Amino acid sequence: WDTKAGPVRVLVTGGSGMLGKAVEHVVMNEGLKREGEEWIFLSSKDADLRDLGQTKAVFEKHRPTHVIHLAAKVGGIYEHMRDNLLFLSDNLRINDNVLQTAHDTGVTKVVSCLSSCIFPDKITYPIDETMIHNGLPHDSNFGYSHAKRLIDIQNRGYFEQYGRRYTSVIPTNVFGPHDNFNKDKAHVMSALIGKTYKAKMEGTPVTVCGTGAARRLFTLSWDVGRLIVWVLREYDEIQPIILSVGEEDEISIKDAVEMIAEALDFKGEIKYDTSFSDGQLRKTTSIAKLRRYHPDFTFTPVKEGIKMTCDWFVANYNSARI
Ligand code: NDP
Image 1 (cartoon, protein in one colour):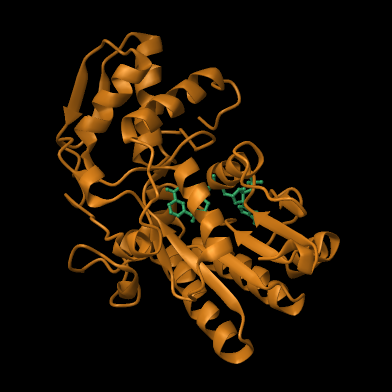
Image 2 (tube, protein in one colour):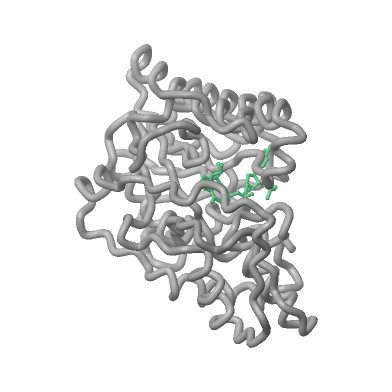
Protein backbone atom coordinates (compact mmCIF):
# COMPACT_ATOMS: atom_id res chain seq x y z
CA TRP A 1 0.00 0.00 0.00
CA ASP A 2 0.95 3.60 -0.39
CA THR A 3 1.43 5.45 2.90
CA LYS A 4 1.29 8.72 0.94
CA ALA A 5 -2.39 7.96 0.28
CA GLY A 6 -3.08 8.49 3.98
CA PRO A 7 -2.13 7.11 7.37
CA VAL A 8 -1.71 3.34 7.77
CA ARG A 9 -2.64 2.03 11.19
CA VAL A 10 -2.37 -1.73 11.70
CA LEU A 11 -4.23 -3.15 14.68
CA VAL A 12 -3.06 -6.59 15.84
CA THR A 13 -5.60 -8.45 18.00
CA GLY A 14 -4.03 -11.14 20.21
CA GLY A 15 -0.90 -8.99 20.23
CA SER A 16 0.20 -10.39 23.61
CA GLY A 17 0.15 -14.05 22.48
CA MET A 18 2.91 -16.11 20.88
CA LEU A 19 2.06 -15.13 17.30
CA GLY A 20 1.27 -11.53 18.22
CA LYS A 21 4.69 -11.21 19.88
CA ALA A 22 6.27 -12.74 16.77
CA VAL A 23 4.58 -10.14 14.53
CA GLU A 24 5.68 -7.40 16.95
CA HIS A 25 9.25 -8.73 16.85
CA VAL A 26 9.52 -8.80 13.04
CA VAL A 27 7.80 -5.42 12.62
CA MET A 28 9.61 -3.53 15.37
CA ASN A 29 13.02 -5.28 15.53
CA GLU A 30 13.61 -6.57 12.00
CA GLY A 31 12.72 -3.43 10.10
CA LEU A 32 9.45 -4.59 8.49
CA LYS A 33 7.73 -1.45 9.80
CA ARG A 34 7.60 1.16 7.02
CA GLU A 35 7.74 4.89 7.39
CA GLY A 36 4.35 6.42 8.13
CA GLU A 37 2.89 3.21 9.56
CA GLU A 38 1.57 2.88 13.08
CA TRP A 39 1.27 -0.58 14.64
CA ILE A 40 -0.92 -1.26 17.69
CA PHE A 41 -0.75 -4.57 19.58
CA LEU A 42 -3.77 -5.44 21.73
CA SER A 43 -4.22 -7.87 24.59
CA SER A 44 -7.48 -8.95 26.22
CA LYS A 45 -6.83 -6.23 28.82
CA ASP A 46 -7.35 -3.55 26.16
CA ALA A 47 -10.69 -5.05 25.11
CA ASP A 48 -12.54 -8.29 25.66
CA LEU A 49 -13.38 -8.98 22.02
CA ARG A 50 -16.25 -11.28 23.01
CA ASP A 51 -18.04 -8.04 23.86
CA LEU A 52 -19.28 -5.94 20.92
CA GLY A 53 -19.23 -2.68 22.90
CA GLN A 54 -15.60 -3.14 23.95
CA THR A 55 -14.66 -4.16 20.40
CA LYS A 56 -16.26 -1.03 18.93
CA ALA A 57 -14.60 1.16 21.58
CA VAL A 58 -11.12 -0.16 20.86
CA PHE A 59 -11.61 0.29 17.09
CA GLU A 60 -12.88 3.82 17.67
CA LYS A 61 -9.86 4.57 19.86
CA HIS A 62 -7.24 3.37 17.33
CA ARG A 63 -9.13 3.83 14.01
CA PRO A 64 -7.18 1.07 12.20
CA THR A 65 -6.95 0.91 8.42
CA HIS A 66 -5.69 -2.71 8.53
CA VAL A 67 -6.21 -5.53 11.04
CA ILE A 68 -4.24 -8.70 11.80
CA HIS A 69 -6.71 -10.77 13.79
CA LEU A 70 -4.93 -13.32 15.97
CA ALA A 71 -7.03 -13.22 19.17
CA ALA A 72 -8.74 -16.51 19.92
CA LYS A 73 -9.73 -18.67 22.83
CA VAL A 74 -7.18 -21.48 22.50
CA GLY A 75 -6.53 -24.40 24.82
CA GLY A 76 -5.07 -27.85 25.24
CA ILE A 77 -6.86 -30.89 23.86
CA TYR A 78 -8.49 -31.86 27.19
CA GLU A 79 -9.87 -28.34 27.71
CA HIS A 80 -11.39 -28.51 24.23
CA MET A 81 -12.94 -31.93 24.89
CA ARG A 82 -14.42 -30.76 28.20
CA ASP A 83 -15.82 -27.50 26.85
CA ASN A 84 -16.34 -27.60 23.08
CA LEU A 85 -19.40 -25.36 23.36
CA LEU A 86 -17.44 -22.57 25.08
CA PHE A 87 -14.65 -22.71 22.46
CA LEU A 88 -17.36 -22.47 19.79
CA SER A 89 -19.29 -19.57 21.33
CA ASP A 90 -16.30 -17.48 22.50
CA ASN A 91 -14.57 -17.75 19.14
CA LEU A 92 -17.76 -17.11 17.16
CA ARG A 93 -18.31 -13.93 19.18
CA ILE A 94 -14.69 -12.74 18.91
CA ASN A 95 -14.55 -13.31 15.14
CA ASP A 96 -17.98 -11.86 14.39
CA ASN A 97 -17.32 -8.75 16.51
CA VAL A 98 -13.90 -8.13 14.93
CA LEU A 99 -15.01 -8.65 11.31
CA GLN A 100 -18.28 -6.74 11.67
CA THR A 101 -16.58 -3.80 13.42
CA ALA A 102 -13.75 -3.80 10.86
CA HIS A 103 -16.33 -3.59 8.08
CA ASP A 104 -18.44 -0.92 9.83
CA THR A 105 -15.39 1.28 10.45
CA GLY A 106 -14.01 0.95 6.90
CA VAL A 107 -10.96 -1.25 7.56
CA THR A 108 -9.61 -2.10 4.09
CA LYS A 109 -7.90 -5.40 4.87
CA VAL A 110 -8.16 -8.02 7.61
CA VAL A 111 -5.88 -11.07 7.88
CA SER A 112 -7.37 -13.63 10.30
CA CYS A 113 -5.80 -16.79 11.60
CA LEU A 114 -7.25 -20.26 11.03
CA SER A 115 -5.46 -23.42 12.12
CA SER A 116 -4.47 -26.72 10.52
CA CYS A 117 -6.45 -28.63 13.18
CA ILE A 118 -9.70 -27.43 11.55
CA PHE A 119 -9.21 -29.62 8.45
CA PRO A 120 -11.53 -32.62 8.02
CA ASP A 121 -10.61 -35.62 10.11
CA LYS A 122 -10.94 -38.05 7.22
CA ILE A 123 -8.96 -36.59 4.37
CA THR A 124 -6.33 -37.43 1.77
CA TYR A 125 -2.79 -36.11 2.16
CA PRO A 126 -1.15 -33.74 1.45
CA ILE A 127 -3.83 -31.31 2.68
CA ASP A 128 -4.31 -28.03 0.84
CA GLU A 129 -6.33 -24.83 1.26
CA THR A 130 -9.25 -26.05 -0.86
CA MET A 131 -10.15 -28.86 1.59
CA ILE A 132 -11.23 -26.95 4.74
CA HIS A 133 -14.94 -27.60 4.34
CA ASN A 134 -14.75 -31.12 2.86
CA GLY A 135 -15.85 -33.08 5.94
CA LEU A 136 -16.27 -32.94 9.71
CA PRO A 137 -13.28 -31.86 11.81
CA HIS A 138 -11.93 -34.14 14.55
CA ASP A 139 -14.44 -34.66 17.39
CA SER A 140 -12.04 -33.50 20.10
CA ASN A 141 -12.15 -29.83 19.04
CA PHE A 142 -15.29 -29.53 16.93
CA GLY A 143 -16.31 -26.24 18.61
CA TYR A 144 -13.06 -24.35 17.94
CA SER A 145 -12.81 -25.84 14.43
CA HIS A 146 -16.28 -24.83 13.32
CA ALA A 147 -15.84 -21.30 14.66
CA LYS A 148 -12.53 -20.98 12.77
CA ARG A 149 -13.98 -22.44 9.55
CA LEU A 150 -16.71 -19.80 9.62
CA ILE A 151 -14.08 -17.03 9.33
CA ASP A 152 -13.51 -18.26 5.77
CA ILE A 153 -17.27 -18.12 5.11
CA GLN A 154 -17.51 -14.63 6.65
CA ASN A 155 -14.61 -13.43 4.46
CA ARG A 156 -16.43 -14.73 1.40
CA GLY A 157 -19.62 -12.92 2.47
CA TYR A 158 -17.86 -9.60 3.13
CA PHE A 159 -16.21 -9.85 -0.29
CA GLU A 160 -19.33 -10.84 -2.23
CA GLN A 161 -21.60 -8.27 -0.59
CA TYR A 162 -19.24 -5.38 0.07
CA GLY A 163 -16.05 -6.07 -1.93
CA ARG A 164 -13.99 -6.25 1.29
CA ARG A 165 -10.60 -7.94 0.97
CA TYR A 166 -10.67 -9.89 4.21
CA THR A 167 -8.59 -13.08 4.09
CA SER A 168 -7.08 -15.74 6.34
CA VAL A 169 -3.91 -17.76 6.91
CA ILE A 170 -3.46 -21.35 8.13
CA PRO A 171 -0.31 -21.91 10.21
CA THR A 172 0.70 -25.47 11.25
CA ASN A 173 2.38 -26.44 14.56
CA VAL A 174 3.83 -23.06 15.43
CA PHE A 175 6.40 -22.79 18.22
CA GLY A 176 8.61 -20.03 19.57
CA PRO A 177 9.15 -17.50 22.36
CA HIS A 178 6.06 -16.51 24.42
CA ASP A 179 4.31 -19.83 23.75
CA ASN A 180 2.44 -21.66 26.49
CA PHE A 181 4.90 -24.27 27.89
CA ASN A 182 2.45 -25.88 30.34
CA LYS A 183 2.45 -29.63 29.67
CA ASP A 184 -1.37 -29.85 29.85
CA LYS A 185 -2.09 -26.74 27.76
CA ALA A 186 0.80 -26.51 25.32
CA HIS A 187 1.19 -27.76 21.78
CA VAL A 188 3.61 -30.65 21.40
CA MET A 189 6.88 -28.75 20.84
CA SER A 190 6.50 -26.36 23.78
CA ALA A 191 5.17 -29.13 26.05
CA LEU A 192 8.33 -31.14 25.28
CA ILE A 193 10.58 -28.13 25.97
CA GLY A 194 8.82 -27.48 29.32
CA LYS A 195 9.00 -31.17 30.32
CA THR A 196 12.65 -31.62 29.35
CA TYR A 197 13.75 -28.52 31.25
CA LYS A 198 11.85 -29.67 34.36
CA ALA A 199 13.47 -33.14 34.09
CA LYS A 200 16.89 -31.51 33.81
CA MET A 201 16.31 -29.38 36.92
CA GLU A 202 14.95 -32.32 38.92
CA GLY A 203 17.51 -34.85 37.64
CA THR A 204 14.78 -37.22 36.41
CA PRO A 205 14.19 -38.96 33.05
CA VAL A 206 11.89 -37.19 30.59
CA THR A 207 8.86 -39.18 29.46
CA VAL A 208 7.48 -38.59 25.98
CA CYS A 209 3.89 -39.65 25.21
CA GLY A 210 3.81 -42.23 22.38
CA THR A 211 6.62 -43.88 20.40
CA GLY A 212 8.07 -40.64 18.97
CA ALA A 213 7.46 -41.92 15.42
CA ALA A 214 4.75 -39.40 14.44
CA ARG A 215 6.04 -36.81 11.99
CA ARG A 216 5.08 -33.12 12.00
CA LEU A 217 5.80 -29.81 10.27
CA PHE A 218 7.08 -27.38 12.92
CA THR A 219 7.27 -23.70 11.97
CA LEU A 220 9.00 -21.01 14.01
CA SER A 221 6.64 -18.23 15.09
CA TRP A 222 8.96 -15.52 13.74
CA ASP A 223 8.75 -17.08 10.25
CA VAL A 224 4.94 -17.12 10.50
CA GLY A 225 5.10 -13.48 11.68
CA ARG A 226 7.18 -12.49 8.64
CA LEU A 227 4.73 -14.28 6.33
CA ILE A 228 1.65 -12.73 7.98
CA VAL A 229 3.11 -9.26 7.28
CA TRP A 230 3.74 -10.34 3.68
CA VAL A 231 0.12 -11.56 3.40
CA LEU A 232 -1.13 -8.22 4.75
CA ARG A 233 0.89 -6.30 2.17
CA GLU A 234 0.92 -8.54 -0.91
CA TYR A 235 -1.56 -11.45 -0.88
CA ASP A 236 -4.76 -10.45 -2.62
CA GLU A 237 -6.97 -13.56 -2.48
CA ILE A 238 -9.93 -13.98 -0.13
CA GLN A 239 -9.28 -17.74 0.16
CA PRO A 240 -6.82 -18.83 2.86
CA ILE A 241 -3.14 -19.64 2.40
CA ILE A 242 -1.17 -22.25 4.38
CA LEU A 243 1.91 -20.81 6.12
CA SER A 244 4.22 -23.68 7.03
CA VAL A 245 7.60 -25.23 6.39
CA GLY A 246 7.56 -27.67 3.47
CA GLU A 247 7.34 -31.46 3.46
CA GLU A 248 11.12 -31.72 3.16
CA ASP A 249 11.40 -30.21 6.67
CA GLU A 250 9.04 -32.69 8.33
CA ILE A 251 10.63 -34.26 11.44
CA SER A 252 9.56 -36.96 13.91
CA ILE A 253 8.68 -36.26 17.54
CA LYS A 254 11.80 -38.28 18.41
CA ASP A 255 13.96 -35.94 16.28
CA ALA A 256 12.35 -32.95 18.04
CA VAL A 257 13.03 -34.40 21.51
CA GLU A 258 16.66 -35.04 20.63
CA MET A 259 17.09 -31.49 19.33
CA ILE A 260 15.50 -30.12 22.52
CA ALA A 261 17.75 -32.30 24.72
CA GLU A 262 20.82 -30.98 22.87
CA ALA A 263 19.63 -27.36 23.07
CA LEU A 264 18.93 -27.61 26.82
CA ASP A 265 22.03 -29.75 27.44
CA PHE A 266 19.83 -32.47 28.96
CA LYS A 267 21.93 -35.59 29.53
CA GLY A 268 19.29 -37.72 31.32
CA GLU A 269 17.26 -40.64 29.98
CA ILE A 270 14.49 -40.12 27.37
CA LYS A 271 11.63 -42.60 27.83
CA TYR A 272 8.77 -43.23 25.41
CA ASP A 273 5.46 -44.17 27.05
CA THR A 274 3.93 -46.33 24.34
CA SER A 275 0.65 -46.67 26.25
CA PHE A 276 -0.17 -43.25 24.72
CA SER A 277 -1.35 -43.07 21.13
CA ASP A 278 0.88 -41.35 18.55
CA GLY A 279 -2.13 -39.64 16.99
CA GLN A 280 -1.96 -39.48 13.22
CA LEU A 281 1.46 -40.58 11.99
CA ARG A 282 1.63 -37.76 9.47
CA LYS A 283 -0.48 -34.66 8.86
CA THR A 284 1.38 -33.34 5.85
CA THR A 285 0.13 -30.06 4.40
CA SER A 286 1.03 -28.77 0.96
CA ILE A 287 2.71 -25.37 0.67
CA ALA A 288 2.49 -25.32 -3.13
CA LYS A 289 0.37 -22.15 -3.00
CA LEU A 290 2.84 -20.32 -0.75
CA ARG A 291 5.73 -21.44 -2.98
CA ARG A 292 3.90 -20.16 -6.05
CA TYR A 293 3.44 -16.69 -4.55
CA HIS A 294 6.64 -16.48 -2.54
CA PRO A 295 9.25 -18.90 -3.98
CA ASP A 296 12.18 -17.17 -2.24
CA PHE A 297 10.99 -17.35 1.36
CA THR A 298 13.58 -19.15 3.50
CA PHE A 299 12.40 -20.83 6.70
CA THR A 300 14.58 -20.94 9.80
CA PRO A 301 15.97 -24.51 10.14
CA VAL A 302 13.96 -26.26 12.87
CA LYS A 303 17.08 -27.05 14.92
CA GLU A 304 17.99 -23.36 15.01
CA GLY A 305 14.41 -22.42 15.95
CA ILE A 306 14.38 -24.97 18.77
CA LYS A 307 17.68 -23.67 20.14
CA MET A 308 16.44 -20.09 20.05
CA THR A 309 13.14 -21.02 21.74
CA CYS A 310 14.91 -23.08 24.44
CA ASP A 311 17.29 -20.19 25.14
CA TRP A 312 14.31 -17.82 25.41
CA PHE A 313 12.47 -20.24 27.72
CA VAL A 314 15.44 -20.62 30.08
CA ALA A 315 16.08 -16.86 30.16
CA ASN A 316 12.38 -16.09 30.79
CA TYR A 317 11.51 -19.07 32.98
CA ASN A 318 10.04 -16.91 35.75
CA SER A 319 7.63 -15.02 33.49
CA ALA A 320 6.84 -17.72 30.87
CA ARG A 321 3.49 -19.55 30.79
CA ILE A 322 4.37 -22.85 32.44
P1 NDP B 1 -1.91 -17.37 22.42
O1 NDP B 1 -2.72 -18.20 23.37
O2 NDP B 1 -0.45 -17.27 22.66
O3 NDP B 1 -2.55 -15.92 22.34
C1 NDP B 1 -3.92 -15.71 22.28
C2 NDP B 1 -4.15 -14.23 22.20
O4 NDP B 1 -5.56 -13.98 22.11
C3 NDP B 1 -3.64 -13.46 23.41
O5 NDP B 1 -3.10 -12.23 22.99
C4 NDP B 1 -4.92 -13.24 24.22
O6 NDP B 1 -4.85 -12.08 25.06
C5 NDP B 1 -5.91 -13.02 23.09
N1 NDP B 1 -7.30 -13.25 23.54
C6 NDP B 1 -7.84 -14.41 23.99
N2 NDP B 1 -9.13 -14.22 24.33
C7 NDP B 1 -9.40 -12.90 24.08
C8 NDP B 1 -10.56 -12.09 24.23
N3 NDP B 1 -11.71 -12.59 24.72
N4 NDP B 1 -10.49 -10.78 23.89
C9 NDP B 1 -9.33 -10.28 23.41
N5 NDP B 1 -8.21 -10.98 23.23
C10 NDP B 1 -8.24 -12.29 23.57
O7 NDP B 1 -2.20 -17.95 20.96
P2 NDP B 1 -1.25 -18.00 19.67
O8 NDP B 1 -0.45 -16.76 19.56
O9 NDP B 1 -0.59 -19.33 19.64
O10 NDP B 1 -2.35 -18.05 18.52
C11 NDP B 1 -2.73 -16.89 17.79
C12 NDP B 1 -3.67 -17.30 16.69
O11 NDP B 1 -3.06 -18.29 15.88
C13 NDP B 1 -4.98 -17.92 17.18
O12 NDP B 1 -6.03 -17.43 16.37
C14 NDP B 1 -4.77 -19.41 16.99
O13 NDP B 1 -5.98 -20.06 16.77
C15 NDP B 1 -3.90 -19.43 15.76
N6 NDP B 1 -3.04 -20.61 15.57
C16 NDP B 1 -2.07 -20.96 16.45
C17 NDP B 1 -1.27 -22.09 16.18
C18 NDP B 1 -0.21 -22.52 17.13
O14 NDP B 1 0.43 -23.56 16.84
N7 NDP B 1 0.03 -21.83 18.23
C19 NDP B 1 -1.42 -22.88 14.99
C20 NDP B 1 -2.44 -22.40 14.13
C21 NDP B 1 -3.22 -21.31 14.42
P3 NDP B 1 -4.27 -12.19 26.59
O15 NDP B 1 -2.78 -12.41 26.47
O16 NDP B 1 -4.60 -10.90 27.20
O17 NDP B 1 -4.96 -13.38 27.21
